[in-house]
Structure formats: C-alpha cells, structure tokens
Image (cartoon, rainbow, N blue to C red; front, side, top):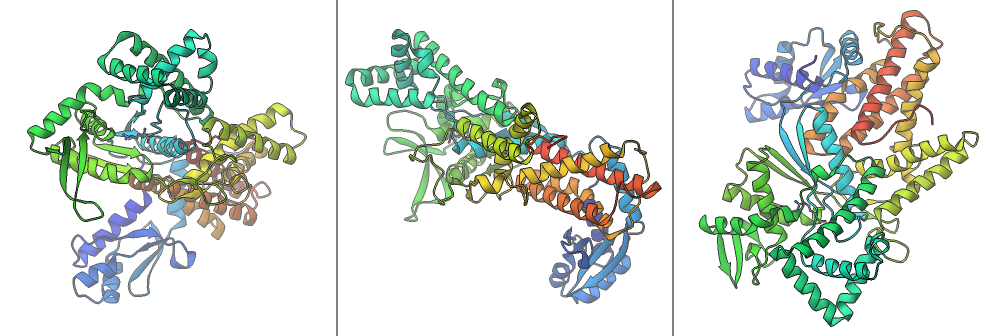
Length: 575
Ligand code: ARG
C-alpha cells in the first residue's frame, strides 16, 4: 500500500534538496505544471527561499537540482525561468504507480491520519418543505462526507434541522384543527401549503393567533399533548426530506438528525457559563458577548446576542451549545458547517466566542464551508415562473423528465425501462454535478441546457466517458487482467499522469473543502482518456501493448467511477 501521494513524494524530495543546499525548512511548493512543455510537475519554492536568504535564485536552483534525488522517479529535471524546477516523471515509475493502483481496492489512495469530523449539512428548517436553498448544503456536504470517509476519516453527519421556535406553535395549533376536521393527512401532503394556510389563519384570526402563542408556551413548558403534535409534525416533515434524500442518493438518516431542539436544556446553561466566564454581559436587557475584532458598519463593537430581552434564546445560542456538544461529547477535532455564505458573520462570531469560552480549543478546526446562491438564467435568485420558491422535489422530477426526453431522443430503440434508469441517473447526476463543479464560494446560474449537455465539464460527459472506458474491456472479451503496464506514447504518459494524480485531488478536496477540485480532476482525466483513445489503438493493437492499454482503460473507468461515486453520482454500464 502506498503511504504518500505523488505530490507528497516529490515535495519531500525537493525539500530535502533545499535543505542540503542550505535552505533549511524552505517549502518546496510542488504543483502539477499544467503544461507538458514545463514537465509534469513544477517545484516553485526556490524563488521564495532565495529571496528570504538573499541568494541568487538561478544559482540556488542549480544547487538544488544537483542535490535532488529523483532516481527512478523522474526522467528529466530542468531549470526554467527565474528558478522553477520542471520535473518530468519517468514512464517506468509511472507505470509502477498505476500497476499498484490498478490492483488495489482504494486505487492506491493512501489513508490519511484519521480525524473524527462533524459535517453539519442539509440542516433544513422543518417548518417548510425543502427548497432549492437546501440543495447546495445537502450535496456539497454529502460529497465532502464521502471524500473524508474514503480517505479514512471518521465522519459524523449532523443534520442540524430547524425544529424549534415560534412557528411550531402555529403549526401544531393548525394541525389540531386539521385533525379535528379529519383532513390532517391531506393537508400535510404539501408542507408549503400547510404552512401557508396556518400562516393565513394566524394573520387573519385573532383567536387562532392567541392559541398559537399559547402553544409555543406549552411546547416550551413540555406539555405532553402539544409535544405529541409537534413530534407528529416533525415526523411528517422529515419524511418529506427523506424522500428528497432518497431521490438525490444522499445518505442522511434519522440517526444523523440532531435538531435545534436537542439543545434546549443546554441553552440556559451556556448563557450562565458565558456569564460566569465574564464573557457575556447585560446590554439593554439582552445578554451579549463582545469579542475583539468584530465591529459594525459604524465601527462600533459588534456584540453576539445570546439571549433576547424577553428571555428567549437564539440560533446563535443553539450553535454555541452544539459546538460544545460536538467537541466535548462527540470528541471531534474538526467541524465543518456547510451553510449559505450569507451566514458567514454568524459563524465567524460563533467561532470566536467558542474559542474564548473554551468550547472549541485551538486544536479543533472550525470551518464555515459557505456557498453562494443558485441563480436562474436571468441572473436573479432561482424562482418559479410565478416568483415562488422552487421545491427541491419538483426540481429533481423535472431534471429526470428532461433527461428522459434527451435519452429517448438519442436512443429511441432502448426499452423504456432502460431509458428510465438512465434518465434517473443522468438527471440527478446533472443537477448535482452542475453545483459541485463550481467554486462553491460563488453564486452560480442554474441552466438545464448546460448541465444536461453531453459535452463540456458536465455529469453526462463524465458518465459517458466512464461507460466508454468500461466498455472497451467488455468488448475485448478476454485479456490478461494482471498484464504489465507499459507507457510509450505521449498520450499514454499524459493519461498516466492524470491517473496518478487521483490521491492528490482527493486530499485537496478534503483539505480545502472544495468539491470542485475533484470535478476538475475528473474532467481532466476524461479529457486525457479521450485523447489517448484517439491516439492509441486499444482493441486493434496486439500482445503486451494491447494488454497494457486495456489495463489503462480499466483503471480510467474505475477511477472515474470512484470519483463520481465520491460526488454522489452513479455510473451506468450502458448509456
Ligand atoms: N437551519 C438553518 C437554515 O436553514 C441552517 C443550519 C445550519 N447549521 C448550523 N449549525 N447553524 O438556514
């Protein structure tokens, strides 16, 4: 089993050479070169090391190269520009790497030093149905959880659902009415509708509004009857979420649900603790924590409110209780919050307060994995034609229908059941991939035509690349599955480099919580595969060359399948 990725290996060798050349501890900065004429990898650390030590960079580069031990790894090492070191990997070495990957379940990806990680994702508000706003959190979180697990980390998914607050008084009050009218089941079939009707009652009927408020008090006071109703409502709402998760192929279960209400008993304790530590102070009857460095637009200190005037607790208080629980009870050393970028202020303050209060010691990584909004093709927030919010369930049904039409057009002769199966995978895969392939920090335009295209950086293109690569082996019928991989052609070399980079791609996704790195990697791999397939005959070649190329096809297929699987996207044997 491999213990280092390719970058780590090159990095350690270049660092050793830098040390030997008198630059102790200088970073090597090894990256894929991106262009064949610059070799396969480039070490860019020499310039920085030379600058810091007032050395001549070209001279230092020459010294480093003289000391650089890449015997059996590189076929060529060259100095370029002001001191770049261009490294071309040796074909025999690459072939050996691929050989090892091909005969390994994990494709040669080394296990990371295991961490226990909470991924807080999806986390919808249960008062309403999941809408497109929850799509990004759900699929980005799911992809990150899968990648972390694959690398050997222990992931604890936390679905921090919104299941508490005054809305639930209104909803339970309305649920009682609906039950008395014998229409609860029908009314709950559409939660958006249910919410709207409850809200109308609340706004228009004073007696109902009063009852709703009483229910909030009863709910908070632990009244058995109101609690039963509330739980019933939550159960229905979670069923709606689970239907969406099932469609999306997202693995969240009831076990992962730990909603806001789970922290109720802790909220007063947290506030008392913050007071005892001298962090929380009274401010205009509210309880507020001030942390250095946070100011409002006027430059005045910006407080973090943990208890309102009326004694009520807030979203913020709940998150403090949650981080305390995650660190002290779940014992995790990293917490990822996959939540809309607009909550960035909340998280920065929450993290700062958690550090000060000791809820999350410095050794625990707290990261807000933010994301931008999904826009319609008009560049405005994604809405239905009538301006309403788009339900996730409807969006996914539309994706599958559109994919079905497309598949039927391309393959009219396939039986309907087969076309349906393809459409399910392509439709859902396209929606997910369109989202995951963008840098999550930016807003992105949701476009059916772009995401369903069979060309470009899309799910259909990659799924199809898989089907093709896997198909070569099927067509070959019999061949030596343990054949030696031999790389001779430039296209083989480029494909091999792409294949050998898989572990590095996954590590960067895990480190920077950026799923689009994996998408970019898979797209590059598929592109190199297509070039290889054009340039190098596989089935028509003979003997060892044929066997070797078949292994390359197979390894490509397996890597694409594994990579897409880590994004939560299914592959098909026929498309
Ligand atoms: N329910 C919240 C919302 O829909 C997201 C919760 C995210 N997680 C957290 N720990 N705050 O905006």
